[in-house]
Image 1 (cartoon, rainbow, N blue to C red):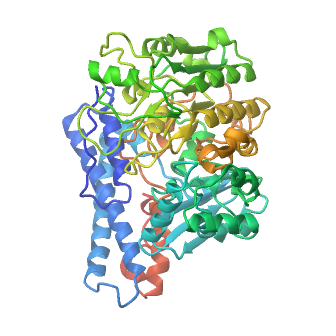
Image 2: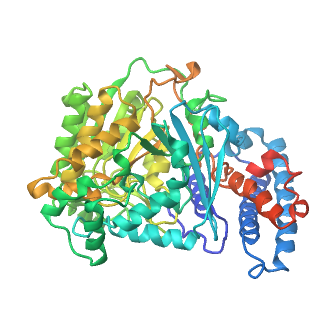
Image 3: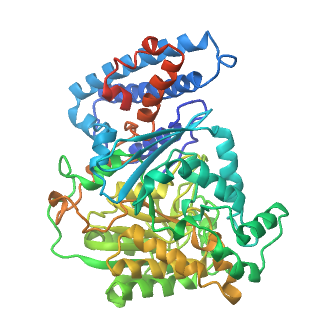
Length: 603
């Protein structure tokens, strides 16, 4: 049983929720490496210094962005001194931690990645864009192989950007809401528009968002505000007129959707995670380094025995023990689409439906734990098709979980939930694609960025996840999740398989399923992690061997990284932004960034 404590409210760090989750995730594992209390105290102090340094660095960048009338003349030199002092203290503490406990430092603070190293990991048809929102602007870098990095300082305030995203997402909560085409186009213009000419020839776009940009469902963005369809739907949105079946079929497919471009989109938690995905591990995992004797194409778990009615996958966060909770879980809607979905996926991937599917009375926690002993580690694709219960900023005995068939009598070993703690123990070393075909499996309440479920599965060894960003329709999800693995089985990359699956749902909008044209139905899912195919130009050292779980500490949430460094997605962006802003005010020398080491700029 895990107690997820309230997230801290006092910190001003741009990554405060990331740090809170990492710390909790680390404490959740009894195998934590530190046993000496003095070293543990030093590690905790190092983490706190890093968080304070990141927060001060961001405040300093924001202060430089203010005009003369807005700038606090007393605050700027104080921040300059504080940033320099904290950076020095952090480096001293980190050096001492590495000296005392080198293995801990390797696990929690791998070398950050710079722009040139990240660009070398990209294929010629790939591009990576890293974002961070400041009070007065959005800053971003675009990387491509063999080309100089492109820096943009986009004139949109964080508060305004968050408001635009909020309105946009509100229109995606139900197909009965008119779609916000106005903000869909504005977000495209603000976030991707500045890089439009730099994306010519790009077929795969890897995005490293901060906690604000992460909330954008990029596939549902609109690239043009021209045409009758846009004008009609813009007017419908302004008057808040509910869409009709005729409008779904006549206008929605004619919009200039980003998903219709030949561009596969995926999310990375950090730029350094690309190195984890595409480079050889530095050392072996604590799990067995022996390659499994054989692989399985697919294992599917879902369609738990539930007694409620409904057509959405998801539910309220529940306290995960007690008979009252069991009855509540049992009362969640049965999802008939999950059964058809898993059967279709197994057939498309060449798996034996009798051996590979665990549904109804076999969709239980004991069965999953039994599979974990010898089969999950061999499965190439794993799908959990069920309700997902997502926690947020809460206190008490509550944690995110996937719903399984509840037992007649609950025990601590089987309470009808596959909790985050259970997921942390899974062995997914050989997994190429993990599908979470449920509600809100990729997002949280806004306080943790990507959901705890996603983080836990990466911790367990998954390299690529397909997750959802809002409550999903069972019928639409069944069609989408049947199509995506089918395209993947045709040797398309993961990102390339998802895009045509979305289009297939959109263009199948007819009759009672006319709402399939609304992005509520086809746009909730996104790939997090590796987007290309498992055999696409993988480094020779990675082919045919078990992935190291420690290798995944390169992610912004990896299992041994409670306090891992920010990289291109945060402090490097801010660090590169600082000299530009300081130079504009003839203060560059006083900041000291010109003399600071590259590792300090990337933290």
